[in-house]
Structure formats: structure tokens, C-alpha cells
Image (cartoon, rainbow over all chains, first blue to last red; front, side, top):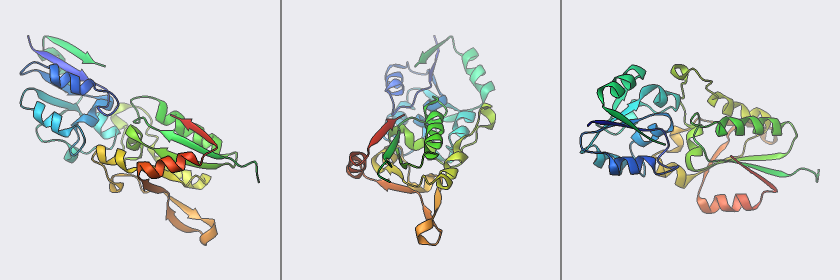
Length: 102
Length: 135
């Protein structure tokens, strides 16, 4: 059963992303959106945790939410893929279920 | 003018994900009309409010970040950003909007409003305030 995990909270505000990455199954997909996109940035206090998780899960980030927050794609951790709203829909369709970490 | 009080607005939330950042900005602008001694502090995720290059076109919501540049015109020119919060988020002063004001006591010279301060310095600044409003 493939799962899409969504995280919409900043990893500096609460540990939703950290818990999600700790508990996501191998090969699962994780989508960062809204304030969750800050978890995709390089050089932050959580960047090492996110980089390590890339060996276990695929991580996606919603482009429009990055742009709104002034986070350029050049600031992202290597290996994280940017998707648009259509890509968000595709991810929900491709996976059997969605686990929303609030 | 002994009735002038030192007002500090603390900003600790990222923009857009919640309404706090925008609400704080509205309150600051309203408060500025009462000619008090106003300072702003940005810490934790609040530092993300000042990141330059924000573009909310695809979200269909208002990009309120240009409003921060108007604060100088309302004599709101003491904007303190906590160094530790920037560092935890991989940010430097260069990632922030260059907020300016014109100093009337110095022949209207254009000066920077943002001052990056350490947690210890921030603690001291908070200590000096008469009123603290937290967002």
C-alpha cells in the first residue's frame, strides 16, 4: 500500500515533518505545502534530517507555496522535486491513501 | 511627552500559513497613527515574513510583504531580527527585504531599519518596553 504523506506546518513551529519522516514507510511519497515548504530549504536546522529521509522516501514540494514565501528553487535540498497543483493531484491519485500530518 | 510609551510588536509566525503575520502588520500600522515609540521584533518563524521575493500570484491571495517597506514612512524604523532564528533557518540579512527609513535628525539620510540582534540583546530590548503585543 503506497501512501502520500502531506505536511503543511513549519518544521520550526512543531515537529510534524520530523514525525512524518520518522514514521513514513520505505518508498512512500511526502509532499510539503503551505508552511511545510520551509522544510525543503538547505542549510536549516532540520536539513540534515530531511536529507537523510531522502534515502527512504520521495519528497515533493508545492511550487506556488515556495514562490509565495520567496523561497527560490536554488535554495532547496538536492533531490526534492517541485510540483504544481496538478502534480499534487497526480500524487494523490498515484497513491492508495493520504496521511495528512497537521 | 511623558505619555509616549514604548510599544513592541513581537512576530513569531510565518506569513500566509496563518493570518497572524498580516494581522500584526495591520495593528502596527493602526498603532503608528498614535505617535507612540514603536518597535518590531521578528523571531522564530516570524523572520520568514521579511524574506524578499515573495510572489503569491499562484495562490490568489494578497502579497502583503511590500507593506513592510512602508513602515519607515510611519516612523516605524526599529525592526529587530533575532540572529539565532535566522541561523536556524539558513537565512542571512541578505535574504531579507532591505527596509529603509529617512532620518529626520540626520538631514533625512536613508538608513536601514533592520537590526540583527542576538537573543541576549533581544532580551534587553524586550526588557525596556512599556507594552508588548505578541503575534
